[in-house]
Every structure is written in C-alpha cells, then in structure tokens.
Amino acid sequence: MDTKKLIKVVEIVLGTALFIFIGYGMYLKQFKGYDAFQEYIREDGVVEYLTTFFLIFSSLVCIYRIFHYRKMKKPLWILTWALLALLFFFAAGEEISWGQRLTGVQSSEFFLQHNIQGETNIHNLVVEGKNLNIMIFSRLMFLCLFIYFVLSRLLVWKIPFIHNLVEKFNLPLPRIQHIMLMLASNSLVILIDITRQSELHELSFGFIFFMIFLNPARISKE
Image (cartoon, rainbow, N blue to C red; front, side):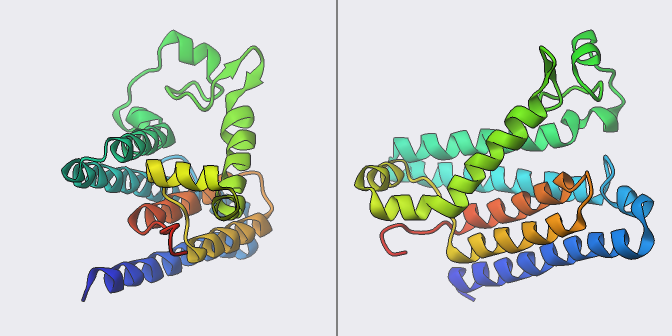
C-alpha cells in the first residue's frame, strides 16, 4: 500500500472513531444520564487521555517534518513546524495539567491562589478577575478556528499576499474532508447541550489536527 492510500485509510479510521466516541457520549447523556456522561468526560478519563495522545501525536508529526525539511534546507518551513510542535506539546501538557494529578505533585502557592482548579496549568488562571480559559482559550480560539477552517482556503485563493505567505512558511491548511469532519463532529457535540461540551470539542480538535498535519492541503493544487 502506497503512502497516499495508507493516509486515506488512516483518515477514514480516525474519522469513524471520532464519531463513535462522540456518539457514545450522546448515548450516555440521553439514555444513561448526566452522571454517566460526566464519568465519561471526567478529568483523567478516556476522553481527556485520547485528546492528550492525539495532541502529542500531532506534535510528533511536526517534529518529523522538521527533520525532513532540514534535509531540504528550508529554514522558514522548519520554523513553522517547530512552533507548531511546541504549541501542540504545550496543549497536551495543559490538557492533563502537566501530569500533576498523575504524579500527585502539589501546586505552588501561586496556582493555588490564581487557578480556578488549584492546578498547575495556564488555561485555568484567573487574572484580575478574568478567566483566561474563557477569554483566550475559548473566545479567541473559536475565532481563530473559524478563520482557519472556514475562511483560510478562500483567503489563500483570493488574496495573493496571503497565498505567498502560506507558501513561504509552508503553513498547513485543512483539506475539504478535514473541514467537513470538523463541522460535522462539532455540530453533533453541540447537540449534547450541556456545560462540558468542551471536552468533546477538544477531542475533535486533537483528532482532526493530527490528520491535517499528516496530510495538509497543497495550496497550489487544491
């Protein structure tokens, strides 16, 4: 099996798996009750660990590309994928509070006072009465993801400056199947209609960004 066919199979398997995990969450909420659903998406549960694993896998794909582009002597491409590798490694660490709950390490006084969960992570900090998770990791991230999945390809096609920028830095763009999967999976999550939808949204992001990094769109052809 050649690489393209293998990647296609991987995407089909992961896309199917994502819908199964979301569907199971919907089943628990509708037929087993709120407590069963909460157990499914709890801290250090299956959903959180799956999200963490795929964020780490995404980071590893970025690292692989860094070594590949070193051989091609593409410094700006290396910079792009190095930043993405760091970003997704950071996201994975934040997802599990850097392993704090697993190791039983006590938070410092700063995090006990300023983190709404009393854990060692940044996204749950409260600064001057404002929750960073809501301000940055929810609202700002939603805007960025909307631009990335809904507008980025259109902007690349229509605006030469953005096209050249994306090409120069080798920024990964989603393919059509990635966009459709993101819209479909997150629409299903919204139907669950409970306060902790974010855990399943994050699961979708982990799966889909892994697929994007593994198989980004080629802007010159798509």
